Image (tube, rainbow, N blue to C red):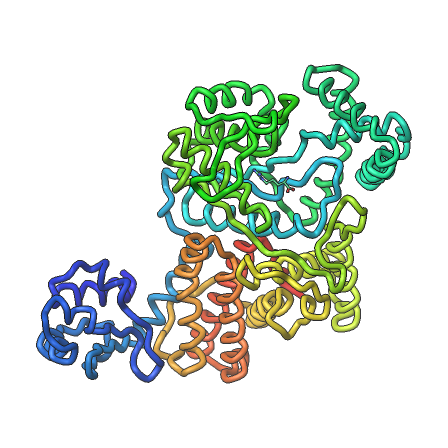
Amino acid sequence: MDFKTLISELIAEAAERPAEEIYSALEVPKAAMGDFAFPCFRLSKIFRKAPPAIAKERFEKLKKPAVIEKIDVVGGYINFFIDKTAFNKSVLEKILKEGKAYICSDEGKGKTVCIDYSSPNIAKPFHIGHLRSTVIGNSLYRIYSALGYDTVGINHLGDWGTQFGKLISAYKHWGDKKDVEEKGISELTRLYVLFHTKAEEAPELNDEAREYLVKMQNGDEEALSLWKWFVDISMREFQRVYDMLDISFDSYAGEAFYNDKMPAVVEEIKSKGILEESDGAQVVNLDEYKMPPCLILRRDGGTLYPTRDITAALYRKKTYNFSKCLYVTAVDQKLHFAQWFKVLELMGYDWAASELVHIPFGLVNLGTEGKLSTRTGHVVLMEDVLREAVEKTRAIIEEKNPDLEDKDEIAKEVGIGAVIFDDMFNGRIKNIAFDWNKILNFEGETGPYVQYTHARACSLLRKAEATAADTDIDYSLIADESSQALIKALGDLPAKVKEAAEKYEPYIISRQLIEICQSFNRFYRDNSVLGSEGDVKKARLALVYASKTAIKEGLYLLGIKAPERM
Ligand code: ARG
């Protein structure tokens, strides 16, 4: 049993209150005041007495279990001091014995979470804005999996819509097969941009594009095979990025997948009496909820982005019976999600309100360029950003550690890890100012710093020839302040993983990793590991081993590799 639960139960009995209530009220006081504190003012309403009086009456005679060193009643607080040896043993033994499983749990057993993330648009650049969705979604995927949930990663590709009519038209007028094959998305984007320029002078091009779209919808062979080709060309490029990031999905069912499923859903919306005409289009009025209407069918009968999302949600509910379905997109899609979540609710699906969750995130600012756009062609491609990160890291390694083996592989793990870590170091909603000097700094609060600390721990273990965890340890030998701080940071990680899942915030893990690494480096500065001997050395090495495990597994949850040498 962990200490917090033990203490909650102790107090619960004396206070005659449920242990869960006590558990959530327990505080972590300043170091000298103990390891846990219970504020008695919580009980003063119930007992109609001042907190100090309650503390005195109820808790002065608390029976002290062996693992608790001391219980102090100070004013309205009861402070608990945990026996250091017992604490060290409970934290470290769990890590040493369970390894990776120490941060896992089975709280999600039997429940399914669908995560819709990355979801780039076919024939459009995979830009740095998609990076955030991809890495945050992937991290949430790993976190929920670690907590025992069945997790379904869905890449809801933007593979249908008016842009394809335009693209087919542009390709037929000005495109060249070889160019598209060779240059891929950049050539498709060029054609798309060209279409918009030309259509300004020749508006009839728009009619032509619409006709191609209708052809696609009616199953015209030529139109569909061009569409399919654009999809394949784009996927090839997306896949290169996913490979670099080491990310894969359980489902690639994109928007087109729902084409044949939408008519029934539109019928259903109509039958619920909530579909109305507006300017020739079919919409669901949301005035009452202070939102603009949700567009279901265009004037020409074509379906729209919300129609596809509503259909996809119903399909996923039926197919996966999720307890949550998360949508990781930029904050500028907030209204879109609020609107169609509401439509599902109005259709009578109560689960929509509690089980569908939009996970918004802020923008990435690249100096003066501001928000990125495809129309104008000014985009920063994700592949280029990742390549540059690897190249810059390669140069740093060349300078700092030219004899390192596997330099290319390590530069990849560190460079890409640096970009991912930076993306998840703050709350999602905060905008990111992209800055190479900050991201790649080995001494800041960065991915390379965390990886470097891990590699340092690995190197210590190598030098000590300690390959496996040894649990036959005298835990009283690591009771000094900096060892204690490190052990505490290690012990807190599992709770942080849970919190990250509850709040959909991977940064809670990245911050804890920084805490662990800073504590590790302080521990290492204050205590000689290789220079110590006997049982002391053994205990310190166990702490190094546990730190290495925690950092590696924490990085894994963020989607970052942990090289053993750097
Ligand atoms: N393709 C969209 C975009 O790039 C994101 C899709 C997000 N997922 C969803 N189910 N709407 O903006």
